[in-house]
Amino acid sequence: MSKENLLGRTLPELQKLLVGLGEKPYRGRQLFKWLYGTRQYDFNLMTDFSRKLREELTLKYTFEGLRLQEKVKSADETEKFLFRLEDEQCIESVLIPNDEKGRNTVCISTQAGCAMDCKFCATGKNGLARNLTVGEILGQLIFIRELYGLTAFTNIVFMGMGEPLNNFDNLIRAIEIITDSAGLGLAAKKITVSTAGIVPRIYKLADLSLKVRLALSLNAAIQEKRVKIMPVAETYPLDKLAEAVRYYTQKTGFRVTFEYVLFDGFNDQPEDIIALTELIKGIPCKINIFAYNPVPGMNFTRPSDEKVDWFARELYPRAPAVTVRKSRGRDIAAACGQLAGKINQGGSFHVA
Image (cartoon, rainbow, N blue to C red; front, side):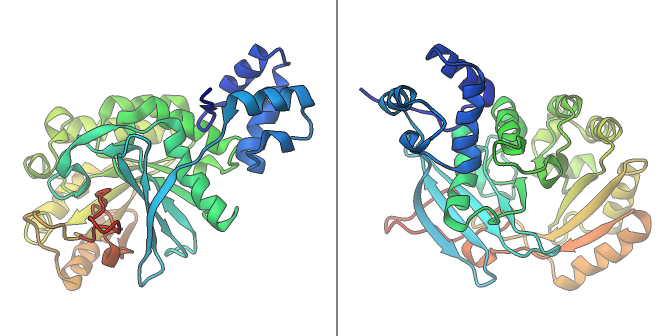
């Protein structure tokens, strides 16, 4: 008899499962804590359960994590993990130790592939395969904790493969497990959800009051330019997007982060600075400036460091907070926009 994998089961689901086995609901929370908090996956070692319950759990269930295909480390200590899923789809996660603020940040995926088709991103080149399950989202974090311990990461960013808000229900269920004190126990303020701009879901996320941070992959503040690089802008134009982001800041009390990737000669002109200044007016925010990370087959060029610094200096008097972010992991194709979830025939990472 094949066993059911409990990875990704939420607290209410485990409570229902234990009630179905003739136990009290509180047993579900005990099991939840054993699996996610204590990281004990052997039911026979769950000492506050009766022998009968331990035997029944062992007979019917398991708690299996993700299968690592390969791991590679950058010269700057950034690590990229390639996981092969049960249906042979591959996803990537990135661990960035000791970032600009001294944090250990893990960047995780929510989809295998991506449907957004942003013209500068490797993930969307082959389209969307499918949404990840709650277990596959959490499995990335659990694997890294098993490898490096509880302090492996202090912050989580949903900025890996896929559009998180297009896998909304599983994203929220994963966040609930991550932030539960008996689960992974990470504060919501340490979690950032990134989006290309799915306006209805931004409103929905704001109304849930989860206290997670929101980052918007903006990359152009002129509608005609944004449409050229991000097709989502046709459905959700900049004026509607700005309204949604403003609502998020008002509803949550948190400022939003605008991520702005600079492409040489495209969105790095004085007119772009003026447009960006107008777009963010009245929105509590900070702006992160990145230089484009080249991806084979993409018709964009990385600007010079001098151009990036000039853009930031010109923008800063007009914006409340501007930071130039230095990409980590470029030499292993682990930087923003480079995740592709691919391996070569030799079984190692495809390095873009």
